[in-house]
Image (cartoon, rainbow, N blue to C red):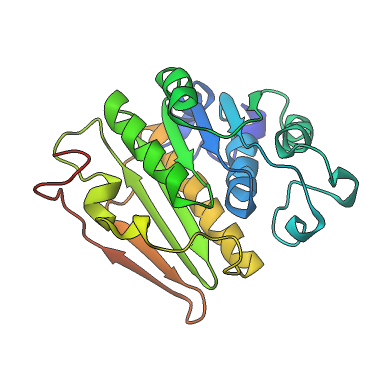
Length: 239
């Protein structure tokens, strides 16, 4: 436990909570700016098993904000480059890589073995698929997103029937909103929101209750806002 000694004095964690972290399996979907930041903190904090899911390769334009990659990684699969760095960061974490786009079939095969899913993808189609499959399997998941100078974060609990799903929170909006590629993102915003996703995931793994609601980050004005969200009657996904 020497590696994690800074966690041991913390109320709500201690040796028991740290052991829970070390016994937890998380699936991380997306290894862009959000996923890179989240993965670093998950692994350095001792998460027991991490499954990395991304089909893309490293490009030069990724390097400003996707902090797991180096110039020499350009052209490599993101899952391969990330695994190399993360395994060196903490060899105690078991890391598995899935180098393909995650659709329903892949999610149904992976999610049952996981304790928690983090969606750090950059498109709404993937996020809606995560919502569907986490609902079907009653699997908790963290939604993290960022665009331009803004970020959003929430922990969704399909394992608790009274809690809202992603559709309850956003309605039909994701079907018409723009995806992140091409819209721009300020590099530190991805890091802040990705690290926050790791915070939520690690709190959950340790047995703590992360804050409820939808958390909105306005980086331009350095302001966090929390919105209360409720289960929506007639939701097309979970009603």
